Image (tube, rainbow, N blue to C red):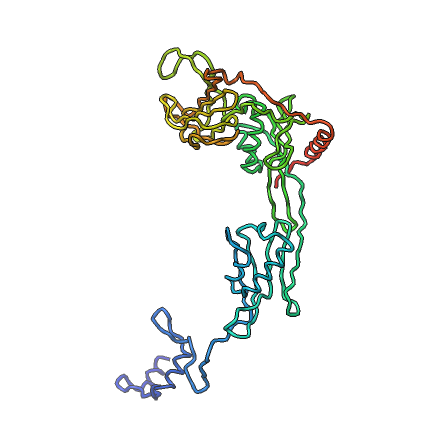
Length: 425
């Protein structure tokens, strides 16, 4: 094979002559280049467009899309018709649609943030707005509303959504932390806070609640057929303590509702609720002061709690003082009816101002270690007519009691809530 190659070779000094095509020029070069493939990373612009020729005719104007699908959001303080107008709907047509929707649901009841899905149709010219062909949105949790153009006329159709109002019941063992255990079981944070406040009106969370106790919550819940879930207020607060049970049921709607025991005994008005979720670490009376190293009268009680834990008003009152106060550190004093006053010391941060009115259970500050303190805790004092008294000696003053038909309706409510089977969302 090598010999054959050498025999047929023209020689190293005789070049081979080949035909070379003439280079392309002008329009032929542009047409060829437009169909070539060259790396774009090297700056090439080939393969992007067809070279101009006699068949290309420039457009006088770009044609519009036959329809436009878009979404708009109802803002806070916005009006329904203004949202449609901003999306491109004519003012008169937007006002007509708003009047139609108002027949199914009050426009003021449509919540800010509601998404409106719209389809705008073809218009005869660019000088007029596009007509609204379709509109659909969630007007309420239990209602969808659609507006569609049929035979040239807009027709509004309300679409009710089936709602299951079975409450949500959550049970579990208290363990090391009542709050954390309830949250881990699936209870919302606001429901757990309401649960702890309700129990605090009947017992001491830090002293009376044990790790082996069982918590029981029933929460208002609405589940739509479309899958969405709304969680409402706490309806039932229960705690099983050995052979004793605490069973509290909320009776009444809105702010007028209050907690009643299963027997029909109502919320104890005037009672001082525990101001913080923690255990009592030092009582009222003479004790050895840990900083001054001497025996001294301790005019309140101390509650051990984590740094930053919320401190709540033990009863309704007016903020008489909110600021620094010597050994108390950050201090809040509340004045209550009947000559009573309460004080809250060593706060890390104060959440109220002097002269403001606070309700029982409202957050007034957060646990800290300011002033003469050896660690994060709440120092809590109670005064009656200016004289310090033992907070643990305060007694209940007013009790509500259901009777007659109200008591029978209440008993039926209790039975219905206790019949709900526990289960996570």
